[in-house]
Image (tube, rainbow, N blue to C red):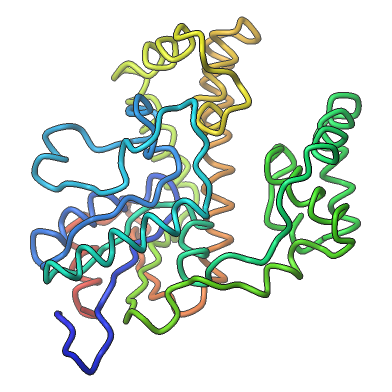
Length: 318
């Protein structure tokens, strides 16, 4: 799998919706191929967001280390631009060591930025951003989402009405430039381009009801493993708040509301499962329109395939 001097180095992407078995597959492939793993999950970059982000446990990480894991405190923001810089550096380091970078996760925007680079978008405008936040406080984010649908329907189609941070940014860009953010994103620089030979795997469940059941089962296991206590510990730190990107992660946001007294634990759990299913739906929408991805079925009518069965499908292309 190593590249010759005449060919670009190989890289592997393992992409998929939440609960599709991405991490297990990446670890299995690492047993059979000369790869090193890079995390592509926007929640797993944060220290202390372990159970709810489905971060591999210590024993697993000792056997199969993941780069770009636990690299930020939850008080800190981490952007797609940050990921682009960090991931490219880690990939180069892995290649220099004679290995193949395998990037695994479900943060599709990170993968997109890595492939295509960053758009030439305007810097944040504090005044316009404050105006949008004030409007959201009065009208609610769904109202601003409807505004975005009018001025940039393509961008609105990629977002959920509760994606306040991204709705805010898209409206901010439009108000600064008068041009839809989706149009500006067509002019991107800094991506991998032709510098890597990338094999992209898209893990696609065929039976949505099976995926929904798997999501719910996994969340209940997270609760048994101490997710409530994990979120409560974050809440009690005193330096975190609900609008931080880390706390807005699926599962954490809903249990944060419970810790804040805004809902019961049962309601928080129900909302978290619903949010996880919505996340999976958005991820699948990205993946079904993803260029050059090799689609790998991860289930059949009788249930999810084993990691050995899924890895066998992937190895045919490597």
